[in-house]
Each structure stands twice: as C-alpha cells, then as structure tokens.
Amino acid sequence: MHTQQDNNLSAIHIDAGNTTASNNLFPVFLKLENLKMLIVGAGKVGVEKLSTVLKNSPLTHVKVVAGSICDDMYALASDYPHVTLQHKDFEDGDLEGIEILIIAVNDKEASAQIQLSAKQKNILVNVADTPDLCDFYLGSIVKKGNLKIGISTNGKSPTVAKRLKEVFGEMIPEEIDEMLENMHLIRNNINGDFDEKVKHLNDLTKTLVSKQATLEEINKPDQKRWPKIVLFCLLAFLFMILGHAVLSNISFSKIAESISALPNYFDSRSFFIMLIIGFLAQMADGSLGMGYGTISTTFLLAYGVPPAFVSSQVHSARVFSSGVSGYSHHRFGNINKKLFKAIALPGIVGAIIGAGTAYFAHGYASYIRIPLSMYTIYLGYFIIKKAFKKKNKKDKVKKAGWLASAGGFMDAFAGGGWGTLVTSTLMAKRRSPRYVIGSVCLAEFFVVLTSSITFFILLKSIPIFDIAGLIIGGIVAAPIAARLVGKLPLKTMFVLVGSLVIITSAFTLYKTIAFFM
Image (cartoon, rainbow, N blue to C red; front, side):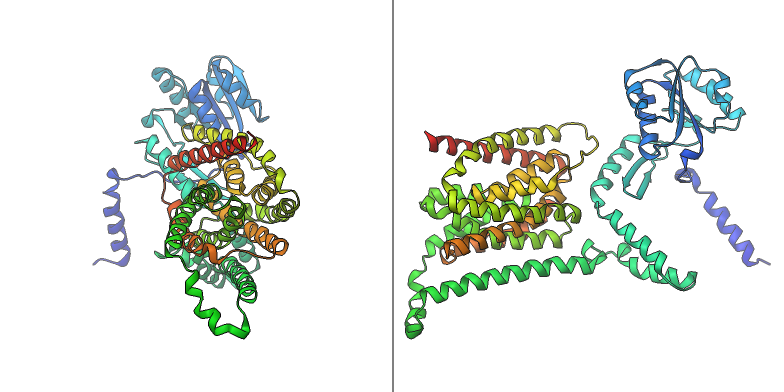
C-alpha cells in the first residue's frame, strides 16, 4: 500500500533522475563582509575577480597573495582599506583563517594543488576558468539600488551571462529602487497578522507578474498625475491663444460674415508643407531628444517664411508637439522621475529669463550661439565615441539644475538649444538614452510652454492659424517617436544622437558665422 509520503518520495526520485541536463547550482547571497577571503594571483584575472567582489560587497576583508602584482591591482586595492596585498609566492599557511578562496593563476597544476590544500581545510574554492575544481561560481550581477539579480550559465558560457546582464540592466528602470523603498515602508506600516500582511502585499504587487503589466499599471496614481497636468496646461494654452485670436480677428457685429470668410484664409498647399515639416521635426526630437528647432527652422526658412516670424512660429508649434511627446513618453515608461524633477523647474526658470531677455536684447543672441555650438559639436563626438567604447560605470550627473537652467535660457533666448545642450550632456555621462530622452522631452513641454506664454504676454500674439499644419504634423509624430525610443539598440541610439548633435550644431555655427560676415 502506497501512502501520500511514498508518493512524495517517488516524485522526488523522478525529479532527481533528470538533474544531469539542468543547472543544479543553488543561488545564495552572502554577507561577504562577515567572511575572510583570499585571492591567489594578481594579474588581469585576479583584478577582475577582486573588482567583482568589491563592486557588490565593498567592505569585504580580502587578502591577495601573488608573486607578481600588476599596477591595476595596486590601483584597485588603494581605494579599499580592507584589501591587503602580499607580494610573495603562495604557501599553505596563507589559508589559515580563510573561509573563501579564489584562485586566479595561469598554471593548471598549481591551481589544482592549491585547491586540494584548501579542500583539506574545508574552504570553499573558486578556480578561474576551471569549473570542475569550483565549489561556487562568480556569476554576472545586475544591480539597481537594493535590487540584485544573479545570472548563472552553470559555467557553460560567462560571455552569455555578461550579455544577459547588459540586457536586464537596460530593461529594469532606475525607479525600481524607489518602488522597493516604498514597498518597504508599506510593509512596515501594515497592521494585522502575517497572513494578512502577505495578502495585502500580494495585492499591491500582482501587476508585476501580469502578462499585461506595464510600468503605468505598477504605479498608477503617479502615472496619471503628470499626463493630467500636461493635458490641462495644453488645453489652457490652446484656449488662451484661440480666445485671443477670436477676439482680435472676428467682429461680433458681423460674426456670420467673419465665419464664412475663414475658408478664404486656408491654403491647402501651405498646410500640407507645414504638416510634413512638423512631422519630420518631431520625429527627430521625440526619438532622439533634440533637433526640432533646427530642423523646423531650416525648412521654414527654405520655404520662404520671413526670419522674423520663424522663431515665434516654431515655439508656438513646439508647445503642442512637445506636450503630446511628453505624454507619450510617460505612457511608454520612458521617464526617470528623479531626472525629470531635477531639470524641469530650473529649465522653466531659465526659459522665463531667456524669453524676457530675448524680447529686450534679441540682437545679442547670436553671440552666444558660437561657443554653444562648439561645445555641443564636441559633445556629439564624445557621444559617438562612447558608443564604441567598452561600457564603464555611469558618471554621476552633477549640477543638472544648472544645466537645465542654461538649456531653458538658450532655448528661449537663442531660438533653440534645450534638447541639443541638455540631452547631449546627459548622454555624454553614459545615461540610458531611453530615460534621458523621455525625461528631457517631458520637461521640454513645460519649458517651451513657459517661454511661449512669456512671449505671448510680451508680444501680445501667437500665429496659431499660420502654423496649424506644423502643429498637427508634430502631434501625429510624437507618439510614434516616443515608441521608437524603446526599440532602437543602445549603440544605434548613441550614434544617431551624436550624429544629429554634430550636424545641427555645425549648421547653427555656420549660420551664425555667416550672419556676422
């Protein structure tokens, strides 16, 4: 007679019989700072092993023993007081008190002998590039704040593990750490017994494992707030300029005649040309984070629009296209909230100052374009160079508020420069193109809206009817471009952004120099 226990044992036996073709490693996360580690070997491999350990557990006590120590090992160890280097050959006595051993010497026989000595002392061992002698492997690690994911290929292909690390690193948003902090606070403030707490937390996080789950569903309240703000501001701006246009151009004593005469002002050829210009300019701006001002200005001038009207038309159209673009980027999860908050308000302040300065001292705007263009040309080269370099640790973005203020000022004062200056500088720091472009585009709406309102107050008019095609073309392109951001390969993004920065900056520099000549 079989009991339930017999059935369970049978199931276990069946599973155990199929383990030869699977990964049987048991994943654990060790508190290495509580353990003593020895690394034998201080060449290139030894540096790589030590670097991996310290990146994840910087307080680990590590002793490195080697007959020859490379300069990179000295440089790495100098930043960590818990790492000691001993320039001597390995001896069995070096294993005293050691709990974890990593062997990184280019000698198979010596490695095997050291591993045998360590096993006699019950020390866990990792032997570089020799899986058969390993008790554990150093897998590839994805780290986003408090989130850490270990990747193992069972020693089959470290290269594949490394590539998967890059993929997951780009897929997981930076905001995941903020979500973990919020969940920690919620967990600590939930009342009730253990089962009730588990049920409540499961309800809060169930969208994470849903097949249809998106970043928008994971954080609904916050995701809804900003699109509503964008929509409200966009409608308020639209009604403001429409109201002004109606009150200024339509006589209420002859309202019927004024309405019937409106079709006479519609030029279908001009409308469709403006539509194409707006579409192309917003496709570049929404997908690469820059280029709207330069592209639209270039085409408008080529089409024959007087230079005096180009700036006001471009700024007016950008309010609508950047609003839809920011909304779309938010919908597709392309926004880094911390970055957005760091650049939005300073950018608005810079735009107000720039618009006011442009009104009273517009003739001096060209003088600033020359050094700005030279700076952004260098940034474009730097971005392209980054695309082909080995990926290093991201640089911290310092003084992002000052950068945004300068970008907002230049955009309003000189007729463009927000995307070129802010996006290219942030990407030169090796920030994720997806989140840089999305955050800059959402902040751009508020920057352009502020400068346009300031211009409206000072100039008393905005030519919305003249640029209807430009507005509609930008609105159509905005969600397409926002979707494209998450689809392009990382290297392609860097190359495209860098190339666009160089081309637009060189064009601006050429036009500015030609103006003075």
